[in-house]
Image (cartoon, rainbow, N blue to C red; front, top):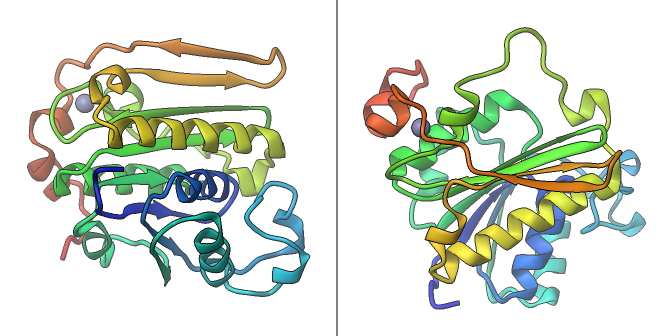
Amino acid sequence: MSDDRPVLIVGAGGLGAPSALILARSGVRLRLVDDDRVDITNLQRQILFTRDDLGEKKVDAAKARLLEAGSPAVEAIDARVVPENAAEFFAGVSLVLDGTDNYATKFMLFDYARAAGVPIVSAGAVRLSGWTMASFPQGGPCLRCVFEDLPAGPTATCAEAGVVGPVVGLIGALQASLALRILSGQENEVRGRLLRYEGLSGSIRRSSPLPRKGCSSCADPATYLSTRGYAPN
Ligand SMILES: [Zn+2]
């Protein structure tokens, strides 16, 4: 990769594990942030880890494995990204890959990435289906053009509703593929594409949502962030 800045991966779980492994094998520097430990119940989908890692901090187990896989440098940060600390993790990165499992954090990461001027590859997966799309600092469509905001009412996370291991493996791999294309200068081929995988039918659909008129994030990401009620530092 010509870009020597690290890719920030938030979450070393079902999405972050496969995407980190693929990016490491592609020789990408990584900054991995997670505050969780390896648990027996996640081993079926978190393919970075084995039984030998049970009870270990995910970032510690992941760092050793990602260096072995070929990443030239891995910053492993044992933390949860919250509004109070978000900005520091975005400093100096080439792009952000969202491997988290809840929508509130996904929108928060998206808002900070845009305000920091870095592309972000968002994704979600619950039960048998998943999606991914990349958003860029300028212009739409962006994540908020497509989803606008948190779905009304309770939303299922993969921790609550469950997710089938191959679904997050596939979505994580698609995220890594989008990230590698952005790092290779193919932004225009990636921009505006929403990829959805439906596990029951086994289909991957690509759609091209239009920028949403009146999307406040597209109009001015920094101002939008300041109106969200987060506490940027
Ligand atoms: Zn937008």
